[in-house]
Length: 319
Image (cartoon, rainbow, N blue to C red):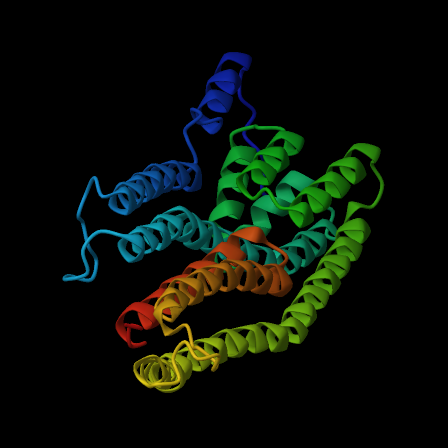
């Protein structure tokens, strides 16, 4: 049977000091701060382009004005949303993979407890197994227990490293069951079963929502194709027709007059519509799929950059 090494009070305090690492800025918070600074800087450049104070262009040959301003607006929004969305989504997916193996670990601890081991000894024995990304966190917890850290403290530190509602609930139940005494193994078995059911329910929700996310992407790119057809075929014919009427004898004689001079302004309206749709549809897609805003920011960045690239380099300019 594995036994825990009990530390003296001074050693115990030193070890807890080592376990509680110095507070540092989380990676995702640092990425968000840098993204905000970069995004605001790009938007300022766009505003100065619009006012004519600068002449910085993404698409050469256009000159200062509305189009470069919209370009830097899109790049600024992407700088704010993109890095934070991708980093936060990667972190949450890592936590999700950790949670997927949590029921297996709880079952192993439960089986070890049925052989008469205490909860700390059962965790130390179960830490020898392989649980994917969860293995590293379990080994940290087992090493803390071996150094004499109380099981409640070790579980609390594990909860701080993996701060999700599921882990918090599991740790709370285990801690209270251990403090109350009795057969902790039965409690762990029930918690493992409940955790697996929650994960299966979450996975089923993601599968059902994947259809809606696909529809959102398809509708967004159909919208872009519609803009391309209008800009390449329909609106140029309107310009030609308007020019023909204005140069004919019917102009000013009460006939219908086509205001073709306003047609190029439609490109700006189309671009603004793409920006609004990309941000709104992307955030909605992420929230529907996973219930998290960070994943929505990731989808919004993908749709925004791809829509902007199509509008600026594929759709013919309306001139």
